Length: 134
Length: 134
DNA sequence: TCGAACCCTCACACGTATGTGAGGGCCAAC
DNA sequence: GTTGGCCCTCACATACGTGTGAGGGTTCGA
Image 1 (cartoon, rainbow over the protein chains, first blue to last red):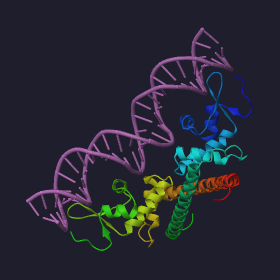
Image 2 (cartoon, chains in turn brown, purple, cyan, yellow):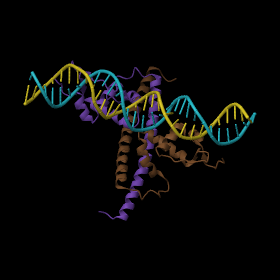
Image 3 (cartoon, rainbow over the protein chains, first blue to last red):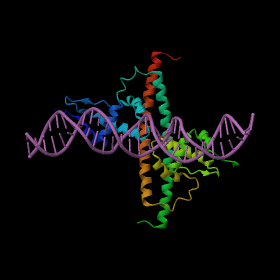
Image 4 (cartoon, rainbow over the protein chains, first blue to last red):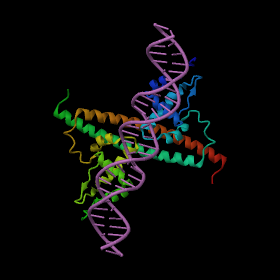
């Protein structure tokens, strides 16, 4: 099985993205990535999949389910080319709704991030007064 | 059972926060809220709990587990008063780590929000050319 | 006093993302 | 040729947040 440049099997992708093999297979099962297959059945990922997986992980961590990630992944392709014909009204509504939810999430995270940071600041000042700098 | 002003039972809190009773009990089980109890065993929530529940829901929706929410909720109290003695080094490290994770989440959401919005924009332009304004 | 509408505590079930392991091929180095 | 390290599928198990319903108490108005 000759390996083309920029192609890899699941182990390498797993290391590059710090993602369990199990999860990579799961993302595939959910239709988020579609690796080619070698004649031996091994999954064959191209280089671009690395970024795609990182994107998926980030969105999952931010609370989006795979069902939604599947909807928005096509929006992320660089040469905005293929995905116009299938722009149904429902799809557009879905995207609008998801943008709103992402806005809400961002606002919530920013607000709480600030509060936690301020709290931490105060704690540190308090600490440094009690036990001056090392 | 005389109801004091600003106090409520689970049904009212559920309506005010648009949150299932089941979830409110779960948040309590996880230590996120601690309602008083009437002599009949009914949960008795004060007014401030409304905001707290909304905060919890927002953070849950943004991907934070209750275990982490429990850590950061005390940071959000208005009169920053009570919570200094228990500022252990591990706690501080945890907060730092969570601030980092929130930053990553925010960046990821902002980036993808932008991409989806741009995509949507292009789709709409495309649509309007195909079938001019209503 | 009865019924409706609350409340309580279990406890089992679901969906989602992931862990884990069994059982088994492929391939390169020894 | 065998061993070790990849890969495969399948499938059961886990944690988390929530749905749902059984079985039962409280409160209040008709």
